[in-house]
Image 1 (cartoon, rainbow, N blue to C red):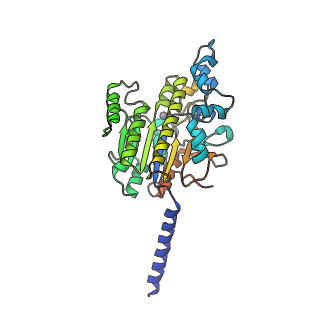
Image 2 (cartoon, rainbow, N blue to C red; image 1 turned 135 degrees about the vertical axis):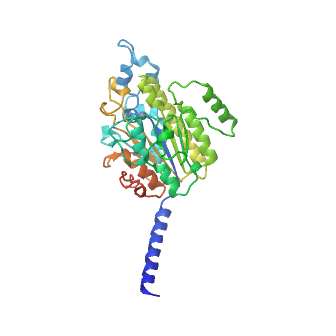
Image 3 (tube, rainbow, N blue to C red; image 1 turned 120 degrees about the horizontal axis):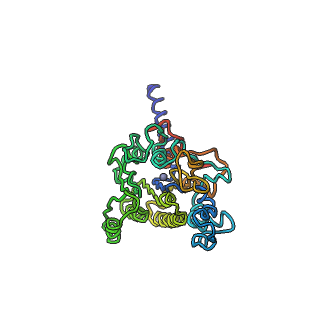
Length: 368
Ligand SMILES: [Zn+2]
């Protein structure tokens, strides 16, 4: 055998071995991304914030008499957060995954964009990079930058149906893909077709129920449409984007923010149970949960976000993966950034996101 050919064969064998080895070491085949718009890390880690609840009531009102207080108060942060999000804190983070972003414990997760509102946050999450000069409003303008959803679809040679987004906010139509139709998107008050009579009825209700925030629907529709899609179509990548945690905060209804967090925790449980009940997803699915931006800390500031609101760049993220043994609150890590989520999604699928965007943040290590 000529020496050059021999060397080529040996290197080729080495490369394919390395590839085979990498892929076989990794168990994840599916990714589910979930975002809770503008959900504060203070509420996720500390549960009901009594000072915030108090700020929404009259000076002489008894805060302890309010239904929110009765339902969600507790002697310690861990007691309160377990009452607010029991599935997240008692099951998801105990048996399946980890969470970062508890600043009271020195765990830092931040956005890198300078706007601190929704479109820039979601674009940073999905493209792996802040584009402060281009992505600077919440207007329904097509994202010029391709997302990790498009990258996964292309590199895994998937049909558009296999990479799907269900979102309460209509602008997700524009955010998640630079090319309309590259993936599947059902956002805002878009109708949803299903052979299920129950889902047909939900679809009719959505059409007949006035939505209070323009092209934004209640999260219940988003969740049930997405769950139906998951169980029927079995996408490789599914993104569920909830919005009520932000809408109620802007309106100053902290009680309804707490209700939304509690309800979304129930959705997370239903989602998790559906994944475990399906042999295609069980043990092969990485679930990533995060938010697009933070909000202010106290007083009236908790209602708001944006570059002038201190703390609105502070976010959190939770991951459960069959490829990670890390559990509970993750603390001893370098600061993490929103621009790492795209590469983390790609890496979970065995892909290197730098192929699409070399400037993107690096994947978050799932192993210590
Ligand atoms: Zn937002």
